[in-house]
Amino acid sequence: MSRSLMIAAAQMGPILRTESRTAVVRRMILLMEKAAARGAELVVFPELALTSFFPRWYLEDQDEIDTFFESRMPSEETLPLFDAAARLGLSFSFGYAEKIRARDGKTRRFNTSVVVSAEGEILLKYRKIHLPGHREAEDWRPFQHLEKRYFEVGNLGFPVTDALGGRIGMCICNDRRWPETFRILGLQKAELVLTGYNTPVHYPPAPAHDHLQDFHNHLSMQAGAYQNGTWVVGVAKAGREEGCDLIGGSCIIAPTGEIAAQCVTLGDEVIVAECDLDRCREIQDNIFNFAEHRQPDQYGLLVETTP
Ligand code: CDT
Image (cartoon, rainbow, N blue to C red):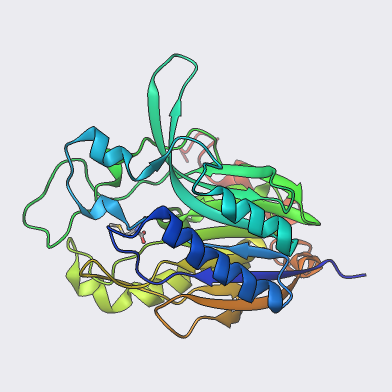
């Protein structure tokens, strides 16, 4: 018997700085409804799905910065997402800027994503570890990338959970470029990795790479899928957002590294694929059978390297 899960990637087009949470949530619910009509059991939204990608702006006023953050999940404004999921009988995943009051009384801020069940339970939470960009304003850039200013490095590791009939892990945007992200999840036998992204077409430190953004996006995720025998769902915030072009290319990738479904626009768009989680075995039991073939004690990391 196959363990089949119908998964939707819900790509989102640009979100204006002035667009209210309520308006964004309405868009997301529309995407959920489209996904449900096509049989989806899990709908995956992008990184920082509730707002414009605010790290492109240098902001100094903490109150203004905090307008982009959620201090409760669900909040009054995001509860309709949870209600829609219950009504439609599906789980969903999305990214948001998370502000918490830690046990020591300090306020902390993370770039976070969650998986939520149809019953409204948060099944898994991940806080982004590989924060790209810089901390201070760099006026030579046409736009900023201030994730290091607005967020702390995630403190939850790369957790996985057994849910929806499989083993699920997450990463967020820049994390997907780092092979150790997928390998850490792969070592935990993840069968499904969800990742949202906001990737500008223009990379100011190395503009010669601009034409490679779509290629590097798929290269990273397809390699992560294949080398760890996992399904990967990569979901973009796409299109021209506040003057900044973001790549699309949201896709659902099989454990073989093949793209099973891919968005063809730069706007709000749903794609659906039937993902047989048992197909992970084809890779995890054979070519990338870690227990059989992986030799970490010979990698020169754990042993004396003198000849
Ligand atoms: N959001 C995010 O992590 N974006 C980065 C942009 C490139 S680094 C400035 C990414 O890896 O796609």
